Image 1 (cartoon, one colour):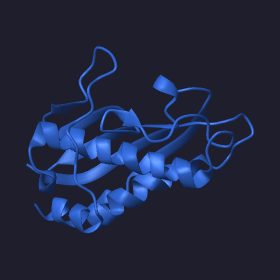
Image 2 (cartoon, rainbow, N blue to C red; image 1 turned 90 degrees about the vertical axis):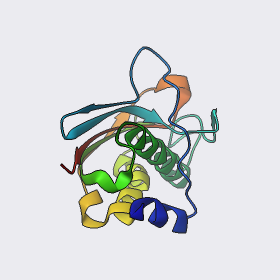
Image 3 (cartoon, rainbow, N blue to C red; image 1 turned 60 degrees about the vertical axis):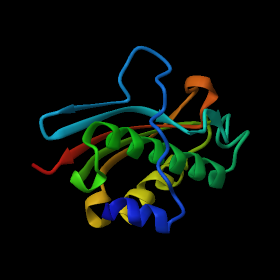
Image 4 (cartoon, rainbow, N blue to C red; image 1 turned 90 degrees about the horizontal axis):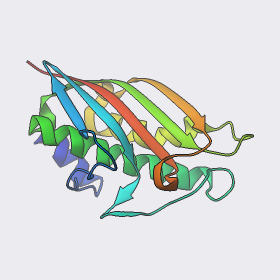
Length: 153
């Protein structure tokens, strides 16, 4: 429970995994890999932030939304492996940012999740990553994250 202790020091308690907004599993474990579905920035069944970064939300608000999405991703991972200490490496993170056409700071927004992962897992939390601007996300979420995680054997 070392990872969860680190999260607790950051003031983070993992929630229950998000209920799917469609027909899919929040996370799927295949061998020593976990594939995490797109996690949005909901807390306790509600969006703290909604809308487009660069119009409705600042970069800082987008960063916080990405952090919330990251917390939800960790909850989904825990739901299929039982203990986050079993994570060997965060391998890949794809961050989708609901943003206006002229917004180009998607990497700074997705850092909200990436910095969380590094604080929780150290260098093993630093993943290969994409940060992509999109014209819309489910329920007007500002951020959605997908992940691939390697699990210790």
